Length: 258
Image (tube, rainbow, N blue to C red; front, side, top):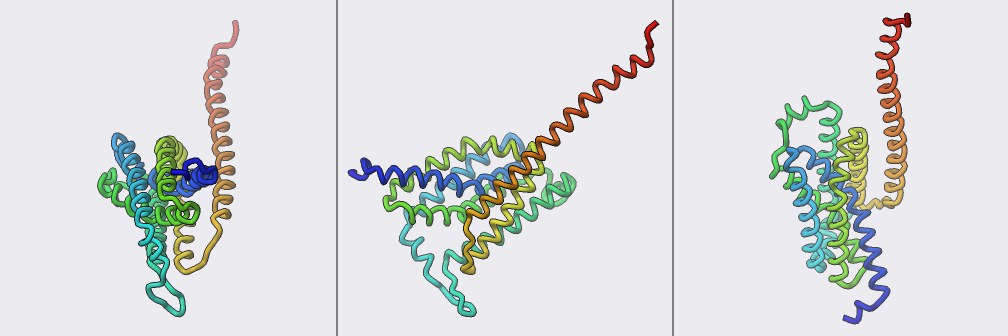
């Protein structure tokens, strides 16, 4: 237990916790969008179950570190390109993310009529949870590999993951409400998930793109969209004020002073 008093362990713990939260942003966005398809009274339950599954998946994978390390060994080759178990998970996970994000964008653009025709008024609870479980496995893999690369003590990894998931649970409802309030943000988030899906497929083929570029692009786009939201809000306030003044002007014109 001497490692508990080691400052390097605590630095690694806080660093890993912060990294897990950052790496979990994509997961939160995807869960928030999927849960929004549920009836309102089931959405909070869906978020909690979804993030609990994310925590459980990460912990189970951490306890199977030896198996995870074997996933990086090539299973077969195609045209000189080796493919490991991790590559296959990233490839099919990227395809799943591309498909789901594209479908969700189509629903957002076409509106409620398209949603009702293709999936009923609301999605089924079990269906949404199963989709969340699949995406949790995909996002958990990179998260766990990052943890294994940074920290050697499994209890520290588990503690960091649990803290990061608890932070996500506290912020998930706020993020979901904000995305639902601003539909343009939902489309923007889904567009980034398409980028993430493309990157997962690229990584499966051995092409690594630093995620810093993606996070910078995401932050820049969110900043621009925040300005757009503020501008639209200002325009709405101006229109409301002008409309409220119009009846007063009309009444003044119809009833001139004697």
